Amino acid sequence: MEDEIKNVLETMHEVGDEAEDSLLYLQTSLIYNTTTLLSECSSKVKQIKEIEYQVSKKIKDLARYNPDLDPYILVPSHLSKIGDNIERLRELVDKKVRENILFDDKSITEITFLLERLMDILRTVSDLIFTRNIFLGRYIQESEAGVMRRAIEYSTLHEERLIEGSALPVVSQLYINMLDAIKGIAWHAKAIAKKLTG
Image (cartoon, rainbow, N blue to C red; front, side, top):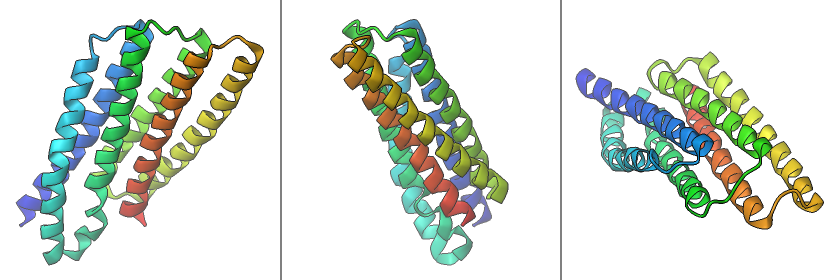
């Protein structure tokens, strides 16, 4: 039983790592305006989705005999939702590159900053899966709040650029949708932290 628990936790930890790697591919694609790494991102998301079902079932079975595992029951579902939002971001970056939609430097810097913060959050989520350390949980929740604040601030600033005419509507829609996906990733990371640390 101990080996099964360890294997399930290691798998969830790896899913967190896969999600972090996916964001790095997205960030590189965004900065260099290329679709080269987007297929890698897509295959990582596919792995996350495939693993979610297996791990979800396994953790529920194990939790029947070990109530200490109850907080983990919804973690695979949240990891899957993180994967959904990463896939949504991938589609948006793909659209940006293929349709040659140009972001100004400010927009690229803002999205890149938020992706960096998300990678840090997901790295910490992976560690939290093993440790259930309350300080890591708190760090994730505070980081999520910071990402949300920044995303709202960036959205407002972008709307001002749109009103001033320095941003096109097609750029705005893409940018705002990216911010929404970023917020979704952060929210599900926070949900994992809350589940695992109370």
